[in-house]
Length: 204
Image 1 (tube, one colour):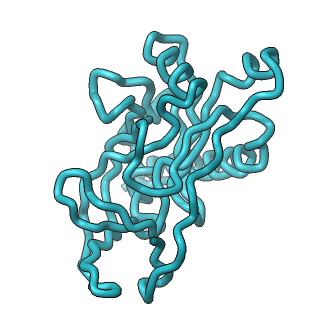
Image 2 (cartoon, rainbow, N blue to C red; image 1 turned 120 degrees about the vertical axis):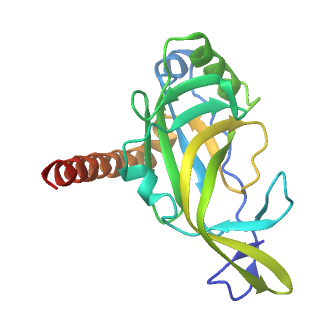
């Protein structure tokens, strides 16, 4: 179910369809980047450890995205499976739907692993690792829901099955051209914000 304005529930929006390529040549050229949603806003999901029903409010990771802490891209939430960070090949941004990402796949062993996992559909969903800073509880249709308003984003992970409905990871090809173009503009905006925050701190 999906909560709308915390007043009730509506039918869930299904996960994004898997991407198929039109030719081997096009597939090879399109596999340098993957894009998708690391999480989605207002999507009720069960916390894998506590079982609590949670939802992320839009913009709850804003401080992390404008800060200078490197956010990691992992496989399966395993620190040993580090693929990239926001200090090098990972870009992050938010829109009305959720936390979006674009990863330039590095020429490393883990980069090759990510490419193959997405290519063969073995892992094409996403998950986030975070620390809650501000939250509150609300009973919605008889269910206690933890509403996360502010959280520190530590990492995003490529997973086989994500907790939050509607996440996905796919090669950045023609089917995602509009999505990718919108992300590029948002990435540029966040880079400007980080520069302004750094300048303000230096002048303080």
